[in-house]
Image (cartoon, rainbow, N blue to C red; front, side, top):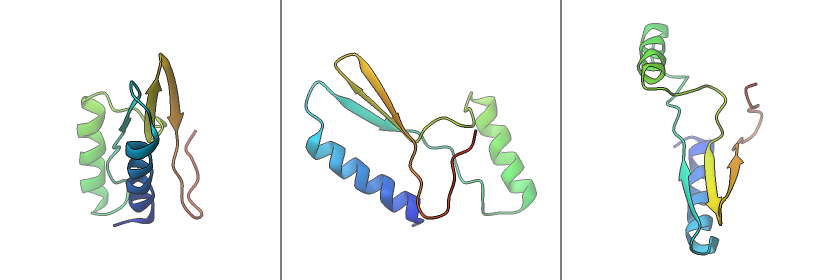
Amino acid sequence: MRPEDRFRARCRMYLDAALPAPGWFTAIEHGRKHGGSDQQRMAEWSRMKAQGVKVGIADLMIVYRGRVLWAELKVGKNKPSE
């Protein structure tokens, strides 16, 4: 499991315990940009783009009492995209 995957799992555990009802959250999976050949990565992004996945969307969406909070999760030297 990648460091960001572990961090996302810890955030999920925290939110499961700490976010009061009627709040809810979801993780946004953007696939893996790394791994596989260039052709495999291009095919994966093409598949996700065809389904409406957008680059730059945050990793978590938290909804509580009509308000939405977006959270971008980064670990180490990873940087957010524009």
